[in-house]
Amino acid sequence: MRRSRAFIPTTKEAPSDATLASHIYLSRAGFISQVASGLYSYMPMAKKVITKIENVINQEMANAGCEEVELSFVTPITLWEESGRSEKFGKELLRFHDRKDNMFVLGPTHEEMMVDLVRNRVTSYKQLPINLYQMKIKFRDEARPRFGIMRGREFLMKDGYSFHSSVEDLDREFDAMERAYKKILARLGLDFRVVEADSGAIGGSGSKELMVIAGSGEDTLAVCDSCEYGANIEIFLGASDEAQKDIIFTSVKDIKGDEICPNCDGKLSLTKGIEVGHIFKLGTTYSAPLKAHYLDENGKAQPFIMGTYGMGVSRIMAAIIEQNHDESGCIWTKESAPYSVNIIISNIKDEAQVKLAEELYENLKSLNVEVMLDDTKERFGFKMKDAELIGFPYSVIIGKELENGVVQIFDRKTKEITPINAQDIKTKILELL
RNA sequence: CGGGGUGUAGCUCAGUAUGGUUAGAGUACUUGGUUUGGGACCAAGGGGCCGAAGGUUCGAGUCCUUUCACCCCGACCA
Image (cartoon, rainbow, N blue to C red; front, side, top):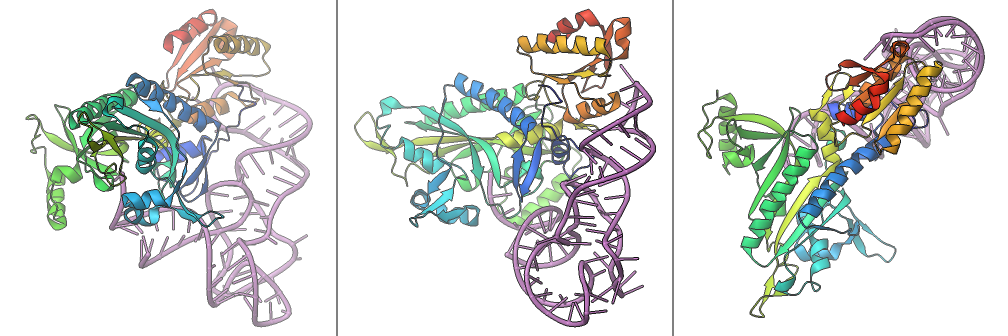
């Protein structure tokens, strides 16, 4: 893409109400634009990042034997009445009537819809297990949306649902999904923990959350320093009594590392995390009330034993920036970057610079490298600031050193500038990617 | 859903206590010129129903009433 033709409206100033790094930089760098409370439009750069994240998820889901579907966003209220969640969700369900006066709901999650899709189609234990997922906008009419796209009313979520004929098989799938989710976050370059969690309103017998470690996270985690153990503080404390919980919370907060891990003998410490994934063992929580049955080996009707696996795609985009930014702006990781390389023409009036830049640009494009060419008339300093704000992992600076046959590679993460012989630049870039 | 705050140019904000020509700045944008390695400089421009409705007044961005939107703290949710 040519920067001169790209729609990337960067600004020097952040929206006055932005407090979180991801909100500030995604706004300033021209990725997102607020439309109303908790509602955002994604501009081209954000759309590219979202697509990159989706691709990683799709690949890992395919590896794990899952199939993608797409359920309708508008869902009949009758399904929610069947499961009993119409009341449970309350005002977070956005309800409305169509022209025939039937009531519908904008989907906040799709357990009911998926069960409805599968029931009466999958009717035998021989057809199990299956695991279906979708990548779909969700809508929850939150009482108080906040933190930019971190907690919007509308958000993009990957939601998967598995159907089994035994608890053992659900356990197997649950573990497989945990591995797939870990792989996804690792590939995206995130530092994260899998923690024991509360099953909350979704219901079910067990659940784990995937937490991206970040100081701005809304969740408090107790994590072990020496093993992989981690728990959401809510479940770690395990106290149902609120007052007691407060007391323990305060004391845990004050400890100097004398809390012992229940898994090994390591020390526990508290940290903050952003929940980007949550996997549940549902059992028959939805299949029973929705009367979704299959016939077992004995010809007896049984409700499906289910699991559900959610991953916040748009939230991951924000979490990447929460974990990877500095005072200059975004720092995208390799797998998440909207473009891998940005070519900066320092002086657009210098024919030699333009010629080399154009050649390199066409060359990399033909090799399917995602490359941006900054061919605008701005000065060098402006282009550098812009590249730092947007957060391309690497920029090739083609500037005054070209007289000596030298160009430079700028590493966004370290901010180091490395001189390279002009004729070696393509090879060097391909090495880095 | 309780408590608090803010709405003036695309964006960030002055101006409102004490009503008074044609509503301002910075930035962004357009044009011309000078610049060209860290968000340049000079000059000339375009851009506003002062959130909306009603009221007080000779006169309202400013005072009064109503209403809408957005933000923050909390509760809730995840």
